[in-house]
Amino acid sequence: MFQRYFPLCLALLLAFGGIAVSNEAQAQARSTVSTGTSGTYTLGPNDRIRLKVYGEADISGEYEIDSSGFASIPLAGRIKAAGLTTGQLERSVSAALAKGIVRDPRVNIEMALYRPYYILGEVKKSGEYPYRLGITILDAVASAGGFTYRANENKVFLRRSGGSVEEVYPLDAPIKVFPGDNIRIPERYF
Image (cartoon, rainbow, N blue to C red):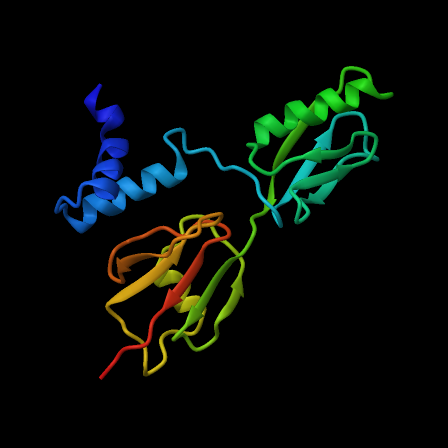
């Protein structure tokens, strides 16, 4: 039972206690808390989904979640998608279609394209980059052309999607990047 709640307890201790814990344990706790214990991905603005409604080719297709968190789907209308998993959105779309002219809709939703992540600071090509599953901070730096000569190659600032606080991590830690994250490589001081 303790193993089940360990990451949450560790995150709370880090937040409130100021207890010294290894960087690896901190990273594990943060990644477990940020992805959730079930590991399911929640949709957000700029995600693109692939919708299949069996027997309804006119409705099936790819749809992008707009900046307010809604997906506009023919015959279903504007449906709130941000904050939902693909399974939850399937149920919402199915319920909306059942109210209209589609009888017993069978809906399948999968990810077509994740929202991008952003990298800025002391990299050669800062900007917006397409997300790939399993990408780490060092992978993101490599995608951005590597470090500039002024880069502090010891630490990185990371602000998770939807978060308002930048967290500092050692650059050599295998920290996962998630869709919508903001990565900032600081300048070193001589």
